[in-house]
Each structure stands twice: as structure tokens, then as C-alpha cells.
Image 1 (cartoon, chains in turn brown, yellow):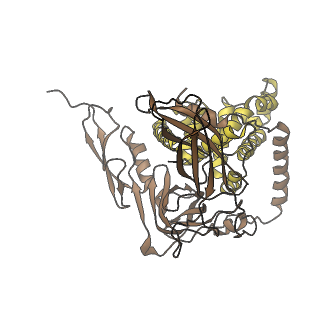
Image 2 (image 1 turned 90 degrees about the horizontal axis):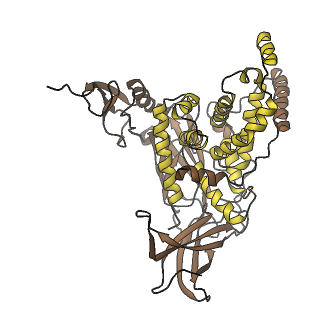
Image 3 (image 1 turned 45 degrees about the vertical axis):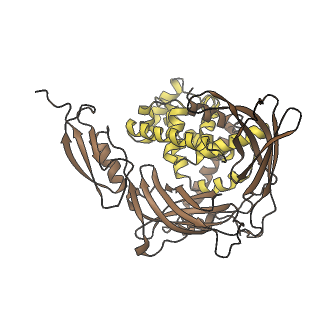
Length: 350
Length: 169
């Protein structure tokens, strides 16, 4: 079993699907009835062309900006294990790992926390402590520490607790520098975030609920993603493109965040800025080894122009793309042309 | 149509009940990996089964009804209008998996990490790594070339390892 398959297996373990045939038949019946009703009514599309109307329709009721109930991280399930060096796979006798689960004390999403974990020897004496930050959406953690000289981890336990480390009145981070990168997996939005002006030193915004949106040149909403952000300094977010939109149309991105408060809805998409601030680049994909038709399609989908040449290649089979310029992983502007060399097979031997 | 029906009846047609009983569990688990939430997974799995039931006459006569079922589920997932709104609610509503709390936290972390991958990567991860389809079969189901499947799979594995491997340091 590959390590990835093992992770997937672990992720679904304990899941007991409850669906039964009756509920499936019920759905079919309900759809049949709905079709009969709709046939006599002018159907109002939930998704208007602009897309923003759809958000208004889906948003669950009035959102509250009241201060959150104070929810804290509760640590449990401490385990101390020998540290295995990831590179060599060998146990390091000088280091150990302590891992734990980190539950929320209420259903409310807690903000950033500062935690302390104490390592205890078998007699219950403190032999060391670890201090670190924990923030949503984490629900577990693992830290390395040095085994006390001459000691072993046999019988070692740990305990710890966390305290909230956030402003009492949650505030929204200020977003800037939004740009979008067209990648072969879809649009990727990059942004910076910072606490608002006047934030006290040492105080920090709590977890945020954010919406990242990508737009076309004409201001059309092409795709959106909702996500939680625990790191107030910004980051990267993948966005799913609407089925009817194409990657080559993506011209700009916006991100907007608001403090996360109990089961909150995410903010509405922030409309795009003026044309002059549009910022889009393309991440060159790896098309080496693909048939030319597929390479062209992949590049065209991203909005890249393609030039084709031929070259001999010892490594790549005849007819497939042997080389590309620029290389994969390079970020380029939207007017860039990619040159692909089609393999002519190995050079003839003189 | 009438001819097809007759054939279906006399040819020991696959019974939907049996199909459902045999496939639902596996489908629901795959949907859990796709959606990241047990509630969304059941919803998606039942909806896919409902679509299949509506077309049972045709689907049961296919060579690979299960493949059709998964293609349907993937399309539904892609087009899910309410996907984002549902995910927003489910992500916070806590433990719906029933076992000891500490293991539940780990699973939620894993599901969230999987869900944070781009949808295109998640799809191939579920089809190839989890359900065991070949790159060729997955390519047919997704409408892409096997080489694209492999590329996405490679990136998916790399991303997942990076996200799971991260600690709170």
C-alpha cells in the first residue's frame, strides 16, 4: 500500500455510510414532481450571469458580527514516541516527538492560541517544556524535542494547555496585492494580508473566513473559493473555475476576508478593481512526453501561444514533445509563446 | 426503447437493489475523499445513485455500470452549485464520524488536507489511488489523456505529502 493510499484509508476509516435505497428512490420521486411543477412556471435561474446574485441567494440569513463565544483549544491524547529521521529512517536516540489532539472547547472556531506542553518523566516530574502557537483549522499537532541527557523516553508522558492569543473584538485582515496565476490545475490566487491600521502591538486578528474570486477581463465572475485563513500574512488559494468558464479568460483575482464567527457564511466576492490593476500570469506546465495535440490543447487552455519545431531526441519517442521553452514551472506573462520540439527519434548514426 | 426494455427483462437484468447494496458503501467513501465531509459525501453519493436509478434501463445494459456511476458522481461534484455553501457549514459542525475523539481529529485533518487540493488533483487521487482505476480508465472517465492523469496524480501525491507532513512548528 503506498503511503498516499494509507493516508486516504485513514481518512475514511470509521465512516459508516447511512444512505439506503429508500432515500434514493425518494429523491427520484421528488425530482419527478419538481419537473412537473417547473414545467408550468417560468424558471428563475439561481445563477444570474453576473454570479453575484447567486451569492445573495445562497447566503444563509443575516450574518452576525457579534463577538465570538470564547472557545479555546483543549489538548489531549498526548503520545511520546522516538523520533525517526525522515531521511535515513533511523531512530534518533537524542530526540523524540510528542503528538496530541487539539479539540475546540465549543463549536465556535477559536482564534490563534499560544500553547505550552510539559514533558514529564515516569515519576511525574517536569523534564522539559515546549511552547508553540496553534491556530485554526488545526486539530492536532506534533513537536520534536530533545531527550534529556542520559534519559530515555520510556514511560515519558506529556500534558499541556493553550490560551487564546487574539484580539477580543475580532477584526478583518486587510488584503492587498491580489494576483492570479493560471496553472494547469486551475487558477491560483496569491495575496498579502496584514492586520488593520491601529492594531495594538502583540494583538492579532483571529481566524478569518475568506472568499477568493477570479474574474474575466469584462468583469465576469469565473470562479470562486471559500476558505479559512489562520495566517494573517497572506498566502495562496486555489480556486475552482465555473464549468462554463475557461482558464484562458481569467484576468484578475480578488480576496476578501472577515473574522470567523460561529458557523458564519463567507463574505460575498469582492468585485474586481479597475483595468489598470489587473495582474495575471501563467505557470508554464510540463508538456514534455505528451502528444503534440495534447500539449497544444493544454497550453491553449492556459492562453499560451504555441510554436512547433522538430528535433532529434534520444530520450523521447518519435512524435511526442521532446523539449519545451520556457521550461515548466516558470511564471510568464499572458502574451508568451511556448516553443515545443517534436521528437524525430534518435539522431541517425553516421 | 421497447426493444431495449424487453431485452433487459429477459436477459437477467441487473437488479438496482443489488447494484445499490453492492456499490453504495464504496461510492460513499470515495465521495468522502472528494468532498471532505461525511454529510456532503452521503448527499453526493445518493444523488449519483438517484441519477443512475432514473436511467437504470440504459445504465444496467452498459458494460460498466459502476464506471457510469462514478462518472456521474464526479460530474455532480464538479457542478455542485451548493458545494461551497455546504462545505462552509460542514467544516465547522464538528465530529460526525463516530469513534474516539482523538482519532476523529486526525481524520478531520486528513480530510481537510485532501479537500484543500485542487479539485482536478482530488479527482485523480480518488479514481486511481483509492478506487484502483488505471490511468487509461480514469482518463476516459474524466475526458482527459492518461498522461494528464499521471501528471495530476504526481502533483496530487506531492501536494498531499507536503500538506500532511506539515506540523504546527
